[in-house]
Image 1 (cartoon, rainbow over the protein chains, first blue to last red):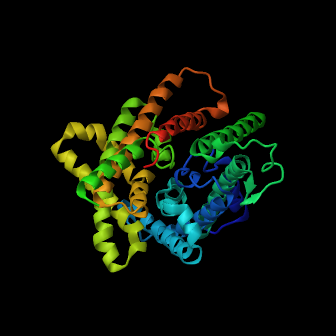
Image 2: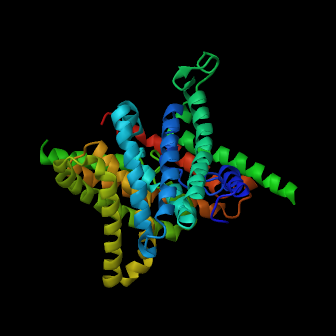
Length: 211
Length: 200
């Protein structure tokens, strides 16, 4: 790829991050820290925003510093850069939204060890110029977020009958038997498995048509 | 609280970390390596033992570092970086030590040690121990219990996955999909344990 970002290059990055190389159903990376908060849509939105911020900026920073970073300690440098942005997110959340900070518990801090952040920095940021690296991080985080939002919407709606905390017309009524299991930890596993299944099947059938 | 009371509480925390609040199945920590390594029983045992050992020791190290360095200095927000550095340094140290003194153990566990630095479960254990305000003794029970819980989960998964090799699974569900469904069923089974420690 040429060093200055051109249109087709950025389009390719966007398609790869959102669909053909999606972090969740294609790479199956980094579900650890975020799956846990998908029981409520609001928590998921905040967590995903934190992830988008961290991933885009740390990928860009890694890319800016790539010529100064010695090869053999690059993992450590990347980790410290990521930790730096995560601390910013954590401090801001604690100061302006303490309830959300305690709801999310340790999971904000766990963005540091989220494999997707490290994975993108290592796969893209370390070898490419800053602007594409920023875009790549941003788009990958978005590709990751929309899958988690799908999971969160289903879990909250069917498990508790609410959406963003507001009761929904049909699902909170007496005719809907709440699927408590979806609000509990196993529900997250099942939902993620089903979403992965559906998206992968669509991808496979498209590939076959393409041939 | 008295010492014997603390030890009793540490025991309870340990058991609940293994079964009712399994770090993998109810907090989703360490899923990445869980999904990729659970293909073979042998590798799972190696990684599980390494996680148990590192988890039990680093939670204690981090407890000391947090309460005796960060709290007096008022630098609590700095804990993410400190914990990561302690974990990475400890893992590196252990790797060198067992390479020098016990080559057989190195061949069994050595390859898994670098993987552990980026395992979310290790950092997660340390962060949980700070948030829940455990004392030093209780932390020792918590670290050990979380590690054993993780080992138990990955071992069970590896055993099940070996049986799946010859099964016919829909194409989109192969690999991570079916593993997640099994993990969900395991989580469901582990919920059954929650009655054991009710009221604690």
